[in-house]
Image (cartoon, rainbow, N blue to C red; front, side, top):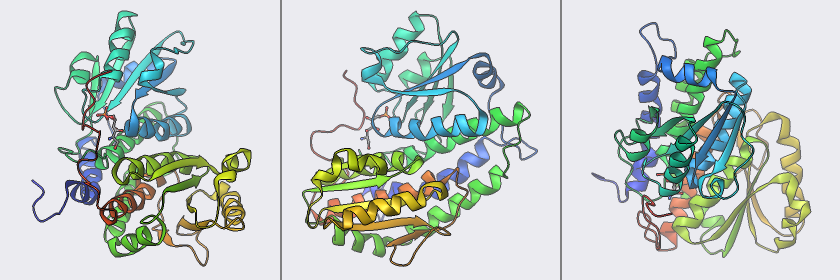
Length: 357
Ligand code: M6R
């Protein structure tokens, strides 16, 4: 039930800090250490490469997850859009493990890949929010997202739960292989939950930002580098599906290879700057678009922020920033859709779970 909330989407955005805290409880042992099912760990250890398969928002979570699995745990990982994988199958490694990410666990495109790779005899793991769903039943292993029912068509809390579970997976693998991850993960994930809470309390700021940048526009661009780029892809999808603004996420460095031709007076460009090593370069990209007339703003991480940034995200560990930086993006999409009189929870032409290929 949505209770006093006007829309499920807003309720689900607000639930994100609680979901992160719940996941921390669900995947901790009695000693307070991160622990996942030993069979799942063994399946990962025995594989030489993970192939993440997903669609839409879950695919975007997979992109962030790949980076975490590789940088935290040194596990080689590829991410594929399910509907492309079947027709354009990459050369597989000797012992692949297929990881399906699906909020609903019912997405037909992902299931088609599952059926196919099972026939080939490969091992499978599903990350889903729905226990007993098709993708969970048919895979060898399941990790649950514990996000609670997600009703709004636009996925929000499932995305952050997916990323959190992928980070838990990465940390579990790293620690059981004797690697020093270099930070106190459970502490940092609690800090993330607090940061999310602080952000969902800034609705007035985000409502105004939506007015300033998105209410009256036909198109919008989100730019970022490194992991911020992946969050920009998700930010653009959120805006597209519920506000019908044509939105794209771009890697900052790609602007000069074509996209910058689209920038004209007043074009909204929202830049994300949460990563130290690309902070300077994304800010130069913003200068480039501003000099061509863009209506640009910067959302930055505390510590990297500069005067004039429109929103400063509370400081969190740099491996976990997507969990926090996506929250204002979700709220921007929500308010833009409201201001444009769109049906936030049930956008046109879309279904919550896509059960046809
Ligand atoms: O249930 P799934 O996670 O498999 O769904 C995948 C996509 O259909 C889904 O994420 C879709 O892109 C959402 N509407 C995005 O908000």
